[in-house]
Image (cartoon, rainbow, N blue to C red; front, top):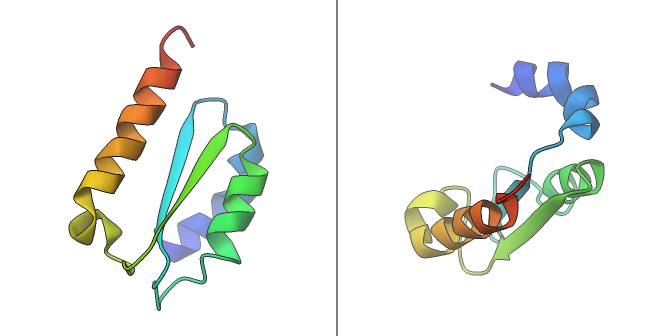
Length: 80
């Protein structure tokens, strides 16, 4: 996945659909201040959710927060 992420990173600004970025503040594998924040800046229509007390597996440890972010994107996408 990492090589693909580097391959396509120049295309992130072309995304037009709503995007929600969810990151655990205690992630020890990804520097969310560097990587997730950069992605959020590149994708202007994105929202960025920093989840305190969670790490890299935020989808497993904060499922409710992840689902809320998905629902938020879905609500905002109506009529897009």
